Image 1 (cartoon, rainbow, N blue to C red):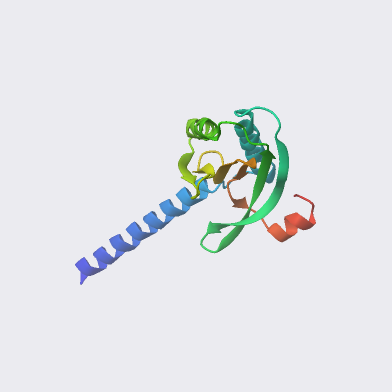
Image 2 (cartoon, rainbow, N blue to C red; image 1 turned 135 degrees about the horizontal axis):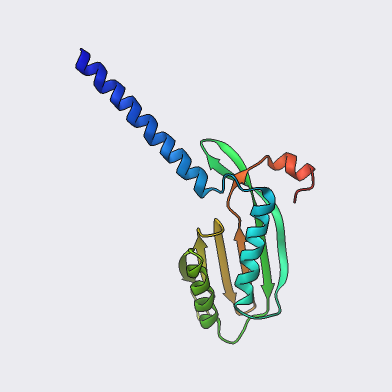
Length: 165
């Protein structure tokens, strides 16, 4: 009986420690502790630096704007989304390689993609690093680079009403 109780206590403590560790790690990867200004600044800086790799001519297309995200365990949060566009260049393959290398240097995990057909659209997606996600789409009709900041604690509705877009 005593042995069974001791095993139960050890199991409960081990489970609690594992849950605490998972919660702390999830919080760290989600940007817990960052302010809205920091989250917004990080995605703007990330997209601006990424576009500078390919030269001039970029214009903001979307944002930076506030969006909803999840922090886990049913807790909502906010993130900032930012995108820029410009005309395509003559060498989209080289441009994808340059952006991908820049992102890898920042600790972003990348994945290249392309659409089907005779004239495929090339691109690279990213996860992690200074942002939660990113995408570079090298479409012959025009390029797009976008990013989403890490998810931070916040009330989307309240922040929207307060003009924290």
